[in-house]
Length: 334
Image (cartoon, rainbow, N blue to C red; front, side):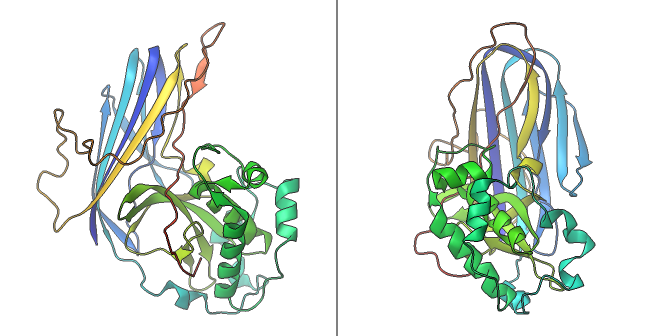
């Protein structure tokens, strides 16, 4: 499937801010299951961008804005062809036994341990103690853990934030796909199955948004993508952006700024199937943005932050919570 992804992040400030240091992770990688045919990033106010790879191999676009501004606009567009494995369950047919070296590969070491947002707590300990003893095929374990996560959390927006740890989501009993992914990661790691967080997008009729899912280690079959929120394996509607231990490794945006202002963030995403790569795909119209009112999908305007009462210091920029909704009548795998 050939898809065009348009992702806009708009940060507005009640007073001028400056000395911004900002990271963006919105460029889809090319791998066995998708091919990035082009990526374009536009920033206003304009700033030079430095590209580097983080410790997990994800592309990061880094820029600084030293002069004062009251609005920061980041528009990223990508053309991606997805060609995912149509039968990923075939790679999970082996017997689950985390003791062999297949499940202690060098590639999995970091993803078998706790991470900042999926760290040990009394709430997580109680959840792990409630799990049945894992047995059968790896596929059976993957499915049973997904069912347990979905029976534990209710999907609900605006009860958690981009930085909510799994313990808080368990206390609330609610959350969005990001929280489902974190609990699923903790469950997998708790039974000895390495798992990692995936940041990306999903296209579905009537619902397009940034999304979070997981990859589980199948042994010799490598990483297999599982969506614990929807209870499915991923298909060609899923576009991967980055992988890490949890959300804290792969936020779509992260930065600091200096000033006394209140900050508001709004995010919109649009995904279109296309027949071919257009010649002018990277052109952005100032007068008519590609996300018109009709195509506007997702907004995360938050309550303004309280003003600083004393000297001006650096403040952390707000993050985009990943929160695509579960499908109606979803069935099986993850």
